[in-house]
Length: 202
Picture 1 (cartoon, rainbow, N blue to C red):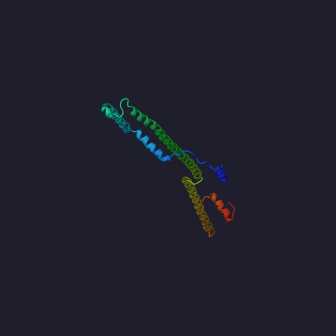
Picture 2 (picture 1 turned 120 degrees about the horizontal axis):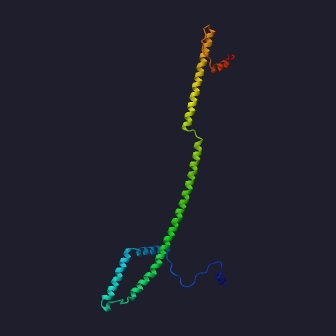
Picture 3 (picture 1 turned 180 degrees about the vertical axis):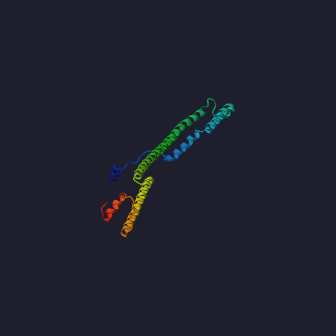
């Protein structure tokens, strides 16, 4: 009794009863059906089928009556062609379904690649924009040239001032030694040098 209850447990699937159908590999069967459908869709198949039907007609029409296996109205040929059509249609549909599955997978892969490419393009666009913003803060060639020219002018002015200062010091030294001062007009820088020497402007 306990064995029967254990066998009737509801948490376990019941084993199927009846005739067990043979199992087959769907992938192998699909490849086989695609091969048949691909072969039936060629011109060679049509030519060979036409030759076979013509030979069938010729044999069952022109051969001696005792050798004819399918006399007119060619019932057996009609049965063979009906069987061929009944099997060809499902095989062609199966091949089309497999092709549709491959097309769907390829479409999903193309969509995934397009999405990744779009993301990469947007990332590169953002990076280029960031580089442009950063380049706006970097010194350009024209800016460096203008700054160097300005520094050169300032250095020239400083050299001129230094030269004038040395010349004024030589004049003071010549005055202190009893020499005659040189008469030359004073410029705006003389006041600065005089103030630096500790004497008022005059």
